[in-house]
Structure formats: structure tokens, C-alpha cells
Length: 268
Image: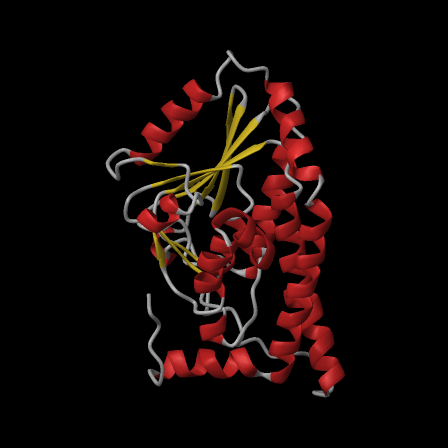
């Protein structure tokens, strides 16, 4: 089975992160595939609702750390050659996948079957509706890894969870549990862990059924989001540029080494 699966049933498209053995951690190439799936659904005239979910215990553990930060830049080893490498490998990819989320024209539902970490957690902030299992949490450990915010989180988290909780998530790299996500309005509804996917699907089919005009739903979404899309675009670029500077300086690489050698423990 593919690591990024796409299925369509009537007006609902479902994108599933399917690397349960890796806790749905994604490589740079898989994040590109996720963005490609979002673009493909965006172009489907019969689809009005997109569900993004995962298989297994986690929604997504974020970037696959075994393939992140350890790459060796090509070129002559100069600072400019290193910066160019990270713009191509890191910035372009992050900007692309993030943009597919905040420009997605369909009603975007994220079904958090489990914890969401890193870039994957950041992207969740652009969902229109978020449904979660009780054990789900959001964690964006960017400062713990020597990085800056990614996935538009410096903008979307403030809008969706408020400045106080966003500061805890982004500046302190604090794990935000499901009950707090509900309290701050980040999560719309909680479903029991048992048969989570089935319950969410049944709820979506009923809630977003034929009693609603689906074209009107998408037009209302466009009106809601039109005013701030430019701000999301700017945040996306600022974050990517900031990330490149950190990688060029070698700071995240040092933090990854500490994790790999046991000098530093991950709070997961």
C-alpha cells in the first residue's frame, strides 16, 4: 500500500497517511506527495469535502528524522553553496506543501487519529474542522530542534488557538493535549478511540450531507479565508527563509546529533 493514499467516495475525498511502522513520519519527498494529493483533490469538481487522517497510533510523527538534517549539501562547501542547497531541499518543499493547505478550496477536515508532531502538526492548523481521538495531542518541537516555526504555524496557530496557547506550542515546544485543544477551540469535536475513523466518516457524511448546498459551503469558506490568505502566504515564506538560515548555520544538525547519541532526550 502507498504511504500517501487517496480515495474518493461521492463528494468526499480521503487522504490517508499510511506509514504506521514509522508513526506516519514523512520524508521530504512524501511531504511533496501529500501536497500533490491536496492539489489533485482541489481540481476534482465532484469533491466538496476533503478528509486528512492517518493509520495506526499516530496521525503523524512529523518529518522522518532519519532523512532530515543529515543530508550533505552539494557544491564547494561554502556558506552560499550550503544555503542554496537548503533553499532547494528544505524551503521549496515546505513552502509548497504548506501552500496546498491554506489555499485548499474544499472543506478541509483533519481527523486526528493520534498525536500530530512537527510540520504535520503545523499543517493541521489550516483545517476548517478538526476532529480528534482523546489521546491525540499537538506538538511542534521546533525550538527544541534548533529550528523556527514551519507550516504556517506562526500564523495559523495564533488564529486557531489564541496567542497564549500558540506561544506555549511554538516558543516552548510544549505538547498540547486534546482537552486543552478543545478548550481553546483548536479541536471541534472528540470521538472515542475505538472505531475512530468509522465514527468520523459517519459524522461527516451526516453533517456535510445533502441538506447543505456544497457549492455554497465552498464559497463561504472562500469568503472567510480570502481576507487572511495573503498573511498566511507571507508567514509561509518568512518561516522557510528562517529555517534555511538555521540549517545553513548547522544548528538543527547539532540538535539531531544530540538526539541520535542520547545527549538529549526528546519529550515525545
